[in-house]
Length: 122
Image 1 (cartoon, rainbow, N blue to C red):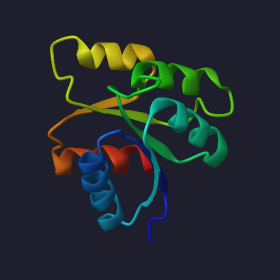
Image 2 (image 1 turned 135 degrees about the horizontal axis):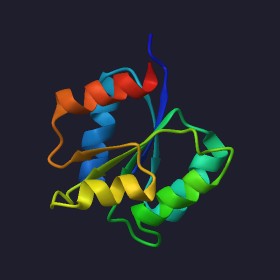
Image 3 (image 1 turned 90 degrees about the vertical axis):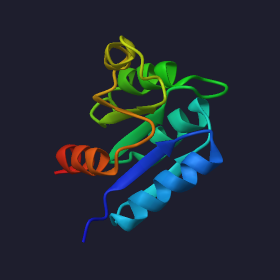
Image 4 (image 1 turned 180 degrees about the vertical axis):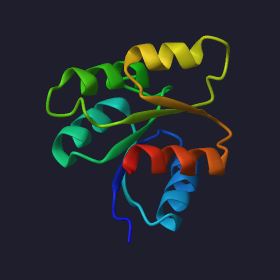
C-alpha cells in the first residue's frame, strides 16, 4: 500500500478539501499548510515525499516558498509540483525557474495529476 506523504500548500479551503480527498483516495498521506510560511515550516519539520504548491498564497507566495525550500540542502531533493490557476504563457517556465519540478494547471486533470505523482514517487 502506498503511504507516501504529500504536503499540500493551498490557501483555498475548497481546493484543499478537493485535492486532499483525491490524494487520500489514491492512498497517500496528506499534510496541509494554508500559506507559504506555514508550508516552508512544515516541509522542514515533516520532510514530505512530495509537495503540491499553490503559487498564489498569502504571507509568502508559492514562488518564494519554493525558492526557500529548494535553497535548503535538507529539503532540496523533495519534488515540488506547482498547482495553479496561473495558466498563461510563461507561467510554467516561471514555476520551473523558481524551482518547481513540474506544473499542473487548475482545474486539475485527475489522470495527469495521478500520473505525475506516480512518476515522482516511484
